[in-house]
Image 1 (cartoon, rainbow, N blue to C red):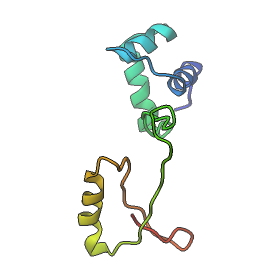
Image 2 (cartoon, one colour; image 1 turned 30 degrees about the vertical axis):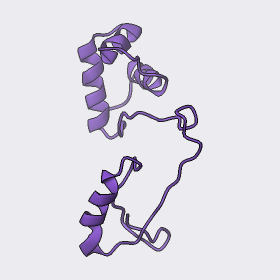
Image 3 (tube, rainbow, N blue to C red; image 1 turned 180 degrees about the vertical axis):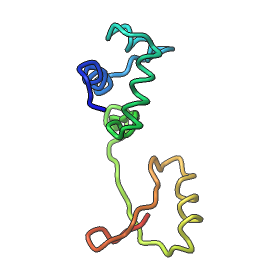
Image 4 (cartoon, one colour; image 1 turned 90 degrees about the vertical axis):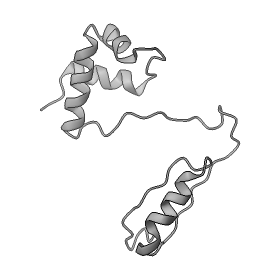
Length: 110
């Protein structure tokens, strides 16, 4: 499946600001001249094809009152991975916590 011009316009809209509305996909559809259902179906197709990885919020930490942010990485024994990962993820101070495959260029797995 190739992206048509409407898909490209939809992606451009998503890269801007998604409408802060009760029905944001309806609002996007109105901007694009298509139905809410077509917006959803196109997004599903883009996701299934691998062209769209995810739709996610981006926190502008400075504008949100945070003066700094940080990333911590660890090399954790496999037997401790789930326990430590769950414990870290429970913290309200942690926004992302996930397992990675360690390799010679990035020797960390959590």
